[in-house]
Structures are given as structure tokens and as C-alpha cells.
Amino acid sequence: MTPSHGPLLHEGKAKRVYATQDSERVAVEFKDDATAFNALKKAQLAGKGELNCQISARLFELLEREGIPTHYIGLQANNWMLVKSVRIVPVEVVVRNIAFGSLCKQMPIEPGTPLDPPLLDLYYKDDAFGDPLLTEARLARLALLSEEQRKELERLAFAVNDSLRRFFASVQLQLVDFKIELGFSADGTLLVADEISPDTCRLWDLQVADAQARILDKDRFRQDLGGVVEAYGEVLKRVQGACPSPRFDG
Ligand code: UDP
Image 1: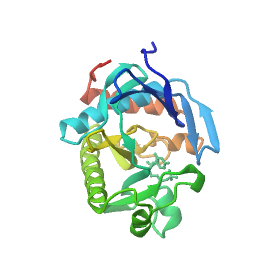
Image 2: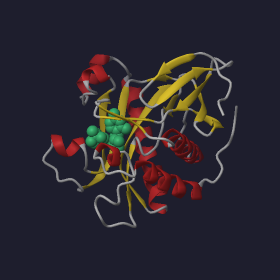
Image 3: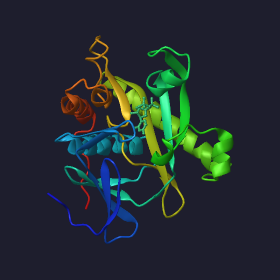
Image 4: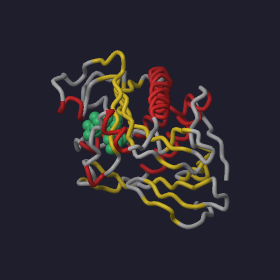
């Protein structure tokens, strides 16, 4: 079912954003497109959009219950979500609990090393530049955020990590790392936006010892391990246990 919506405002790699009758709300359609390595690797994975939408809805509701503001309003259909319109800050905020991925390619640190306290990395969200790692000085030079706003963004990212890490552990999933995006709403509040899904989080099954079999996230696609949609389905199954019925709105 496709909910009624206005014109297409933006199309990204995994989602389309449409206007609605209310200028402060937009409708987000989650696509089945999978991309990795700055879109050099592409595929269609039937059912992925719906799974990511359903997982994100539940995780946004979890964050909201814990007092973390998000753009989420409610589901509109299986792969459609109504959200507050925000001005996205072009910064990808990554929080890492265990060293993996790009971190281990850029630093002498063994994959699997626990990071306590968690490590926060900011990347400039711009595919043309390959999403480079930001320094504090470069962020200031770009003038995307005031010092106060940067502190608030980092505070929110650590709060999201605390909530998600505790929640995932309760359903036997290890939150290795994740990326979030944040945006300013019409009244200037900084909100967690975009999505929170196995496309944007590394999640390992704590019930499985094998280093490949335990992967339940986009690394299955990146590393050609197969079973991507099945893995995302397993994540939804566990998340659903904690949040059975997200609200419908729209
Ligand atoms: N991530 C993402 N989008 C990006 C880059 C990273 O969602 O454009 C997520 C990724 O899935 C992982 C975390 O952010 O959960 C950290 O990714 P990393 O920096 O290790 O990069 P990667 O190894 O994925 O290239």
C-alpha cells in the first residue's frame, strides 16, 4: 500500500522523501536498494526496505521512551514512515563499542577490541569527497554547527548508544557500532533522524560463536556472506519482542 503523499523532495541510496500536506511533516519510503562502498556495490534485496522501516520505527519509539528526541511520528505502511521535516546536518555520527570496519584499517587496533569508553567519530557526509573523517578544526571551518550544537550532537549520540546498547543486549545482540544522522526541526531542536537499522548498525548475535555466522547486519552484503534479508528478519524478530506494535499515524 502506498500512502497518499506530495512531490518527491529527495532520493537517497536507501530512501525517498516526499512532501505531505503539512509543511512540517514528510513521508519516507524505505527502498529495497542495497549499496556499499560509496555505491560501488549495488543490489536489490526484496523485503529489505520493509524490514529497515519496521526496525527503525521500533528503535525510534524506544529512544523516545528514554527521552531522546527523534524525527519519528509514526508508520504509514509497511515500508513508509511519517517523520518531522528536519534540516539534516551533513555529518555522519559514528559511535563504536567494539573496534571493527574502517577504524581497524586506519589505526593499529585489532578488530574485536572492546572500546571503553565508546569512541565517537564524525564524518563529513558528502559522497563526492568519500565521507571523510572530520577533525574538530575542520568541522569548525565548515561552520555547520556552533560549539554548543556540536556538544549537543555528541551528547545525543552517546545517549543513543547507551539506550541501544542496553536494549540490544537484552535481546542477545551486541551493538558493535552504528551511524546516526541528526537534523534541526522547524523550532531549532536537534533530533535523531534518518534510520536506525542493520544498514546503519553492526549487530552480532550473542547466541552464535562463529565470527561470520553471528553477523546480522550490512556486513553480510559488504562481505558477500549471503542471507542478508534473513539476518535483518532475525533482528526485526528480536526487536519486535520488545516493541510489538509501533504506532500508525498518517
Ligand atoms: N555506516 C553507515 N553509513 C556509512 C558509513 C558507516 O551506516 O556511510 C555505519 C556502518 O554500517 C557501521 C558504522 O557506521 O555500523 C561504522 O562504519 P565504519 O566507519 O567502520 O565504516 P565501514 O567499515 O562500514 O566502511
